Image 1 (cartoon, rainbow, N blue to C red):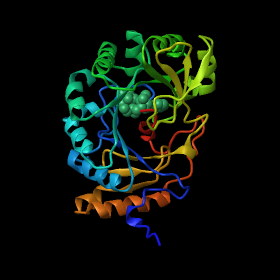
Image 2 (spheres, protein in one colour):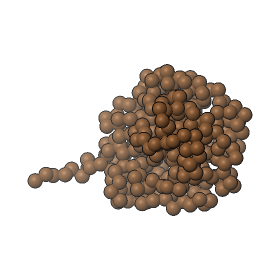
Image 3 (tube, rainbow, N blue to C red):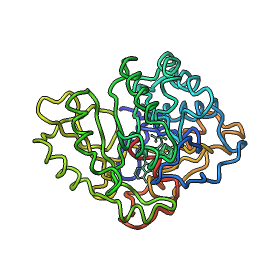
Image 4 (tube, helix red, strand yellow):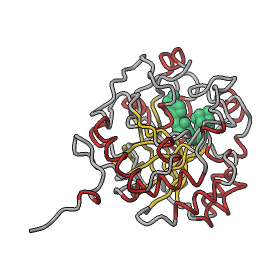
Length: 336
Ligand code: SAM
Ligand code: SF4
């Protein structure tokens, strides 16, 4: 008779979805103020003492890896404003079971940190880029920096990171006239440009209502620039659907958290900068990992808490267009 060791069974929620992907928010801070994401004046930042140390994050990743998590994405806020992120990458790269470490960044600080990140074990990067126009960049991000983002994307290519994904939040009247320019980028360069539906968060409700464009409309407008065929995309854990133009080096993709949710295929949970395990993109369901960690819990005890958390992972989100998330930081789970 085969004896199944339940302490080693991989994480699975009540809906039989295997959880293999952990998104780690290493900071809530950011050096940009994208109109769809953060208020101009920033957020009420988390107290320093509440933020997990890099070692504490690595400990939680170790526990997650012991129950089947295989991919980790570092995100934020802006992860590269966290000092010494490369040493976290190095710690995670050494954890048995972790097969993939990726980073979501706005790209401003990537060029300067790239060598040490790659040396530490980073292999993939997603860079946010909503416009190819300097003035617009300033209007959307409310800080300058397009030249630095472009430099970082070139540097990522030169360093051999692959695949390189670009995340573009599409907003009517702000950047939707650049769909063609981004489409052309995918014809020439081996990049995956993913167009994201703008979601309601914080104080962006008016912008979201006015600026929202569904992925169906985005695709229709992309088709005006040439025939698109569905392609399998670059792999990874994302919810994007990909398409390519004839002979293109790269591909376009759409991410549709609102119009076509991907809850059925959900394989992810998220660790917030202050140590909460968030079970859903738009829900409040979470489990505190920082308290048991700081009280001296072992990897096995943390793993048991992770297993228990599966009971409150909801089947799907219930966010509709025009309705704000009750959890304000929901957005950082998507796209990146
Ligand atoms: N700062 C990094 C960056 O910008 O890539 C990582 C964190 S950011 C919150 C992760 C992703 O979420 C980015 O691609 C960003 O464009 C996207 N995002 C943020 N707010 C959004 C919103 N309201 N709707 C859709 N996407 C959003
Ligand atoms: Fe910062 Fe990323 Fe949010 Fe823009 S989307 S404000 S870069 S965290």
